[in-house]
Length: 222
Image 1: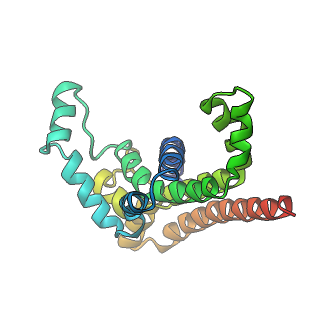
Image 2: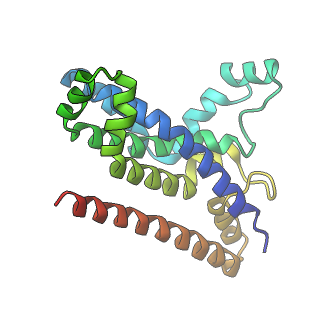
Image 3: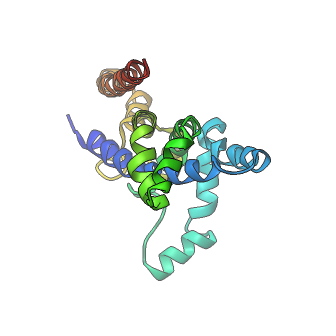
């Protein structure tokens, strides 16, 4: 059994999760302090990839990163890098679809944070950066961790946008999801089932981790 799809899927999911971890926290922390009207507008824009069909997200990325599009053509002419139909192309797709999960979870955690704790830190002469990393982040850690796990699981199972922007090339761009589709399409139901079971086992493990985090959070709140 060729384990490249699993290794590639884990690599793509790990890189995109690391990206959305910082981007999601930054966006959530910033929007949580905005006026309600502006917050609502930005919230819709940042959450939109979560409700759009994955194929629509993939098409939009192709329109942005394709070799004949401004950004894709610029990257290829300046750096000699092709932004589509490579394994790292899938990182763009998975990051876009996983970002709203991280953003919304982190935003909920930040909005429930007791600002008096931050004010207490500032009265002691601590900077805003120190207060954020040493006070706010530890208090919100359960929500942040839950968002990270959900983002990783979503990135691991992404198919629609990934298949459009990275395609399917065995040993180069294949992921678990695209491999399942190709095996089914060629009539190899046994091979498709094996990968379905692998994906289901990994996803179940991450969902179990989310449940444990939520249970721990509820227990800590008593």
